[in-house]
Length: 388
Image (cartoon, rainbow, N blue to C red; front, top):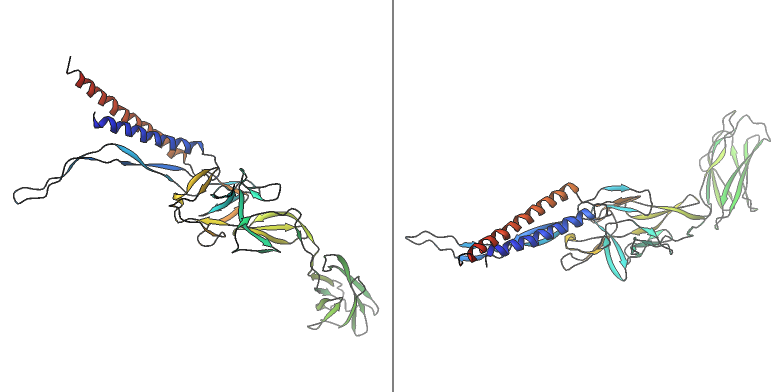
């Protein structure tokens, strides 16, 4: 049989594979985190019909004569270039800008993905649409346990930010120097106990002939007293009431102004988790009803020496292979890993203009190889017609 017949068949098969790959790319043009693939061809083994000859004294060298035996698919390469951004506004949606993969666990197998369309399951764990659990480092009392083994990331329902006792406060403003002796000015301030219980701390400023007396009551029976001279309070002036040190050095004493108030103080009530957002380093920061923010955990990312060596596992996920290298795990913005943003997703990186061009190329290549077969058939037909 003619070699060209089999070369044409190999061309049909290879271009059919190119059509398959291109069709899959176009089908996933709107798939979150999808990475397009490209087909690479190479020639097959060539048949040597005449070997090369070395130059002789009276004869020049001759080149080898070879006849190719067709084409084959050398590989299907995945393009891991960055996809476009789609804003969603959902805090559980995450996008990697740069290199790296999210780490997930599905059925005991570790998988890697660029698709960050996550949501919370009934136990508060971050999961992918097919139920794979997102991996990272949890936080204990607001401290991320980075360096420990990655585990399921969980948004604890009913999480509480503990209360903090008030230990310091500060008074600023002006006490009127022209106030009559005996004038009393009371200033309240909400303070907190170690359990987060709120109470009122009240400071009463009473005008005396030489300045002001300061009396404090913390609402639990504890009291404190101090005196202030007329004019600017000296540095270090303070009154201690029930373990709370109130700084009085910011008090002034000009005429006609009554603006004194307790403007600063630490401590807070206990708060419940209301929402969370993701920082650029992948830290999940919870916002609590008491106005505080506290880390809940950190998303772990993985990098590979050869990402193109990963095997597609379906669901926009990948698994390691013998040529991908082992995963190097770390937080975002470190060791070459990309940054994270919430409320957005990475879309498919399929370029439709390129894919439609590839369709034309594959179609014409298929047609050309089909012509090789029909031409070879006509040659064989002529050969059989020699005998009539």
